[in-house]
Length: 165
Image (cartoon, rainbow, N blue to C red; front, side, top):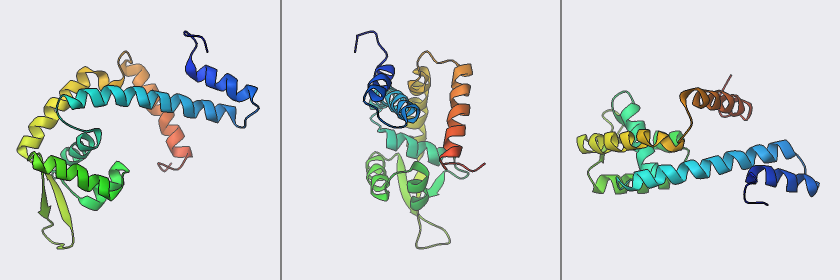
């Protein structure tokens, strides 16, 4: 691979040269994974300045966006697409900093709610502003291209069963 060659195209060329199956899908996978890695590296670097992990940030964002600022722990695991243990660990870290708290559900004693605290809202607001300033890991990608990405990935997500038509 030459220094200026696109690594995705290089991967495709090598895949085809080695007579491997489904070259278009393989290339799409490589492109998505490379984009994901570049984005998450940028996002993680920004979040580190606020002493947050990506999971912690997304957990807090989910709480902020919910109707009453709370979510049952089981719903957080499904919503964030992570193992329940990952949610528990993230909650433990955030709770130590008084950014979230666990609270019993008012009507279902088997359910524990995660609740965003006022301190959590402040940290979340600062981290979100920093991420927005860094274009959420998409530096150089304008609103028009972002919209196209969402549209294309929406179609992909629909076809692979992530969302319903």
